[in-house]
Length: 280
Figure 1: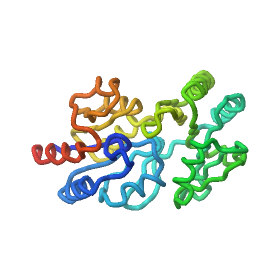
Figure 2: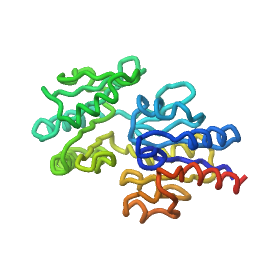
Figure 3: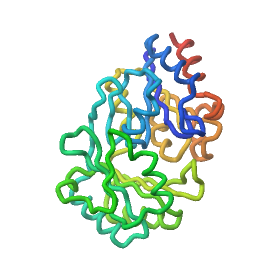
């Protein structure tokens, strides 16, 4: 049976240091060379995904930006990119004008080769500065700080992303939901428990949409999905087999068919290896 394996990254495939272990990289690469179809579905952009997955050889497109785009590990190009329509962008701009958080506005560059990221605040919070410092040297993502998003770029917005306290993020998220029909997701940062994250994508965007798109592209008869967080639930619900890691949130475990070991134990790679051998 042709099976497609799709895993979340942070808290699922990655160890707590946000890296793929040597065992997992070696195992997934070997399985790919044997014909296994392996991909990831993540909120991350290609800028960090390509870096994290550099030692893992896969051939299947990756679901990035929570399903707003696909990224090819072979050609290093975007596909299926879903932008936020301009009227919704304008409505969200009005929401954030009165919000306690200032979002990073991710826009597709005019030549479609990378993302231009704007942030209008005069000063970054410590959490925002840390976020930027980890990413400012990446070739696929360029930051333009302390600057409003240019009007022309507002026609190419793929994502609004904000970092803040639980109260501020929840308030901004609920205001965004009331103002638009965009996909709004907010959750606690697994690396910094006192920090919350907000993501806003175009209408209809989700990891679940990305999973179904990959099912079509690969012709898979069976899809196995791995996750740990709230934004993994939708894609787990559309999978044939939903697998949660031991460290997953209770809500995520509740929708899983299988519970495996924790992310730090390379449980995803071990499960795929055993499942692939069993179904050959």
